[in-house]
Image 1 (cartoon, one colour):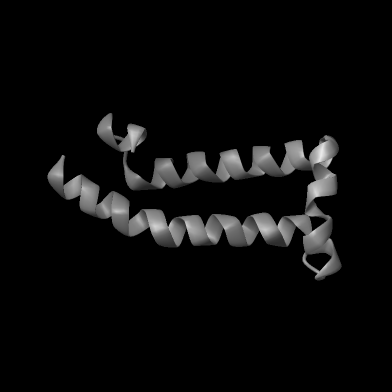
Image 2 (cartoon, rainbow, N blue to C red):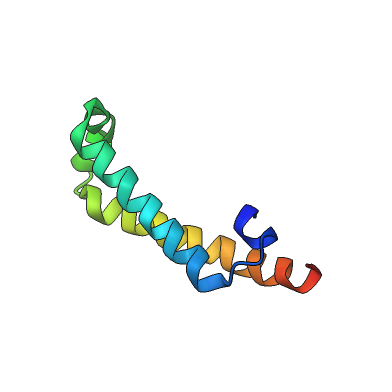
Length: 73
């Protein structure tokens, strides 16, 4: 919402979100947070696949919201 209020276009907002997800993936792999992902590894979901799904779900939720928000700003 912050980037939308300062008049960013939708594509740069999605790229910023992608960079944040990549940073979160890196941090989770390099710290003790990796132990918290054991449940997903037991289900057969890799960290990359998990964060990719997270990003896709985020796009599906935020894209209509950003489009709607652009109409009112």
